[in-house]
Length: 545
Image (tube, rainbow, N blue to C red; front, side):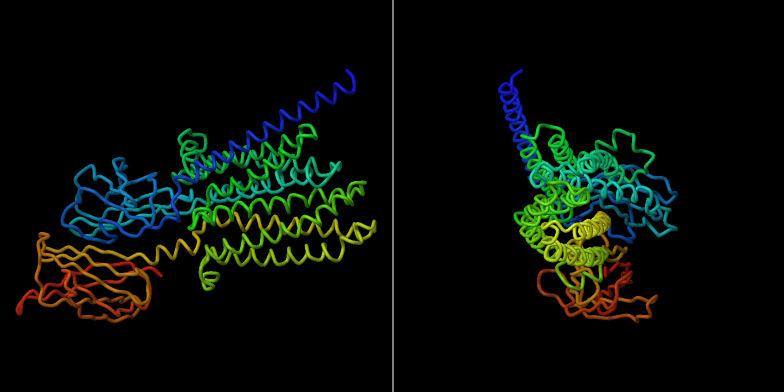
């Protein structure tokens, strides 16, 4: 075959592969748009239950309800009887932010546990339980709340390897295509990183299903586990990540003419995959947070993906090492600027207050990450302004120093991956603030009277208490006076008594009430029915920190 024919064949192959890259990128954008369209805006938090936690009821309710700070999808709902027998609850309805659950059978006297596990809009499972009693409390049935450390460790490790595949793999393929010229140093490493990402992303889908259903690692092979994982918003992240990793691999294996479009499409896929799920992308305003997550992911991949190929090219002293270094030095400044800006915006939205940096696990992880980033940025700045010029001029000693410095940068990057993977298990302060601002509600039921009591907000500090007083059969009760009494003997706090006022809407209200500490309080309502009759009803209530 003639040289002209070879060139024509290569050109045609390049055009076909280029069209394939554009088509795959279009698929990524389409999948991401589907993933975004139905997403709510926050990490779900339970704000109200019926019956209330700790309530003592005269008879079993016909249904249960769980109200969250955002719409959720139920995964596992279980009623544990006083004898410890679990009863699956399969009949439920979704009404905005409330899950209404049918009670399938009459309940006997004693303490029951309603256990729930739902999937939040950011793709993370949320679970908990509440206790209520029929007739009189009994010894609560045992409900295991132990952390599954093997599963949690597997999720954390798979997250790190997914980052390695997306950032070092796809990002490395982009660097080889756009910055390295004809240098091929680091290609094997990049291919290995992509392959590890392909394995990790696939495995993480099953781990997501296990976590969602609260199942152990031994159930990983069950099909329901994988279907559940795919049904969460994280399923979209995995699907788009697989396409991005495939594009990166094609850019390495295909003709040089198609490497750039394939690598660019893969880089875009990295940003879209990260924006499809997670704490940051699910936050409001999504018109801002999702683009910021996209830019943050793309910039990380562009920067750290180039480090290994560049370091190996300098170490091997190839002819293309100096041009590679020059291109990287020219491109890295705007990349780091956008990376820092996007990260700052996301951190402000997620953390909200400086105190949350210390008071929450999410904030403490962020502080560790910021400390590593300061070290990384300082090292990168020294490389850029102290070593690069001499290395470009051909100084062998400086090039060796630069290689060692890049090695240290890579260790810091891997440490940052490990810290970021820990965020998978920590709700952001933004979500905690939403939950804390919600009221705490308790229904107090006795033969002579009952009350629906709300504390707003439901955390320690200044609150407003509002009460609706009723007779024992849910009829109106025209009380002459209502007094709210709060006590917490285990903390040495004597009863706090406040007389309620009647604002005219049928409720009673206590303003300027301060609950000094969080925890379980005993609340009592003294109802003066007449000059000769006082009814007292009480129940426990949990006040959040």
